[in-house]
Each structure stands twice: as structure tokens, then as C-alpha cells.
Image 1 (cartoon, rainbow, N blue to C red):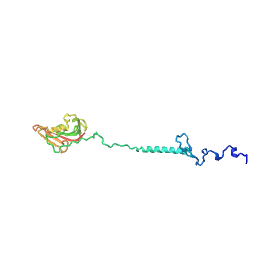
Image 2: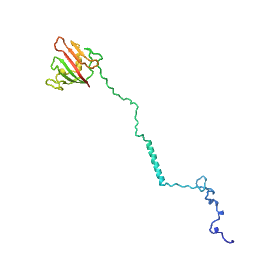
Image 3: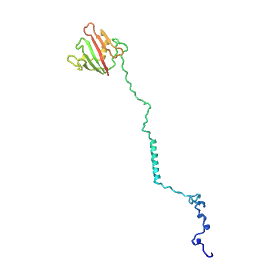
Image 4: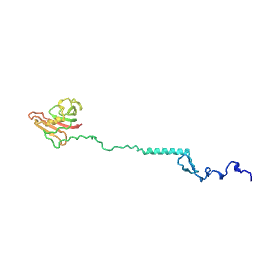
Length: 229
């Protein structure tokens, strides 16, 4: 048809064969690569490659929060030692161990008058009986000693005008076990008889006659119920 303008010329579009190929790449990605400007390298970027950010949905946020809590809990458990406390079992340097004082022992053989051993205690109580030609010869006394000195004397038996436990004021009864032993060691005594069990720290009895020429001055001290502090 002569003189008829083609339809694509009427619409202002060029035919596909006349279009610029560099500006019309195909959708399949097979067209020419385009150059990214401003990168400084001039490296081509393949056409048709797209990048898409993944949106954080509520489900993803919840999963992330649970993961964070679990990691924190495991870290806390890993640092927990179960409440155990380390104990130092190494020996203590310079520690002082209390040592009990040895109990005094009595003589290994019956001692002889004049060489009787001293009584090893300073604080004690004992019962004394005096056999002599004197008042209250049939009575017993409870004597308490503190620091080597008599601190109290009481009646151990009932008698005329007193009860057991009443105080005794007679000074001649303020005697310690050591005083009685000293009587047995008196070198001037005319006669001394001792009853002293082996291994015991005190004698059971001490008889002393000071002078054979003097009548009725002999004394026997009988010791019993000794309680040491």
C-alpha cells in the first residue's frame, strides 16, 4: 500500500530491529551485562540478579527471643558449682594442739618412812580420821584444800552437838595430806608406821610416836575418799 504510514510509526515506536540492544536486555538474563557505575572497579554485574531482604516476622522474633533466653540459662548453669564450697585441707601452720597433763602416779614400791614422796596435788578434798587419845576420836572430818592450803573443814559424821556438814573450828584439824606425809618423814620421830598402796599418790594411814618416854601422844592419821580437782 503506497502512501500508508506503518502502524508502529504512527504510535512513535521503533521496530524491534531498530531499538538499542544495550538498553533492551532480555528478561532471561542472556542479554549483555551492564556496568555498575561508581564502584571504581568497572566489574560487570550480571543482569537479572535480584536481592531481597527477609522481613522479621513475629514468629522469627519469638524464636530469636527463646534462643537468647536458652543461651543465657545454659551460661548461668555452667558457672554454678551446685553450692559446693571449696575446703582447704592443707595443714594449719603454727596451730597449737592442747596436750592433757599426765596424771601423777604413785610410787612403784611401798615407800619407807623418812623418804615418803610429796603429794602431787594442790586442789582436792579428802576425809580424815584421827585415832588418838583426844576429844572426838571416833569422828571423821571432810577437809577441802585449795592452792595447797586448807580452805574448809566440816564434820563428815554426826556427833554430840553437831551434824554432818557443820563447820569445824578446831585449828589442829586444818591439816593437808602433805602435812601428814611430812609427819611420816620426821627424822626425830621415835616410831613411824606407813600404809601406802603401790601406785597410789597418797598413804592410807600414817602412825607417828614422837617420844617413847611420853605416854598417849601417839597419833594415827587415816586418809580416805580423796577427790582431786
